[in-house]
Length: 240
Image (tube, rainbow, N blue to C red; front, side, top):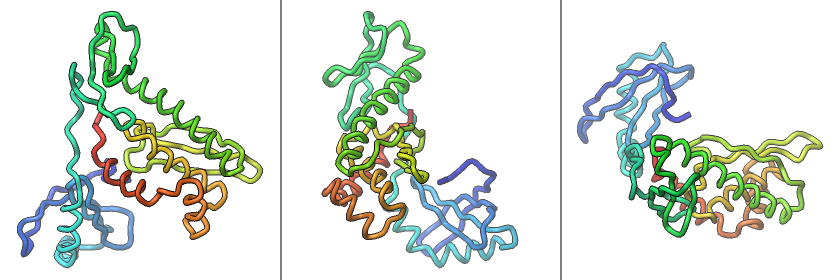
């Protein structure tokens, strides 16, 4: 997992291009590794490697780190639960709107109607609604692409992942199981189609071989542009 919860040191190293602040983590690995995510740099190394060696490695990778930082999007601030705030739903901005007469969350045009009497629970109610909306959408798209591929419809589960959009597993003789991040419901529906097509293609090919990508292209011809769009928009999702 990227930047998983673990003990780390906040450090800095002077590079020709300026001072770099980074996190240092001792990890079970054989070599030094560097991860750039959300505008932060993390260096990981086994216990037997000295800090001086780690920072020498960082100096060697300065240009690579600078490029990744330029491409990285800082983590957005936590979402503010207040009337008028815009929440992305199916690729469109929905404004939170308090309604005295509402008993549940409801999407109407460009507004997400929320019960005024339940203001303290807006976050929980909205996430519950988003997950239910995602499940219904995902199940329908899985049914569609399973029919296109000529396979049995796999079971569906929701994950809370923020960077891994989906996964697929199957055992011999079984229809398989697809796990999708409910956060896809924030994004335009065609990106859900791409992820579903990608995961269902694994029911035919449990790899990323040319044969696998040929199946994806058959199911979703625009997969290359969708993959780029997913990588770009996925970094902008709200922190609920």
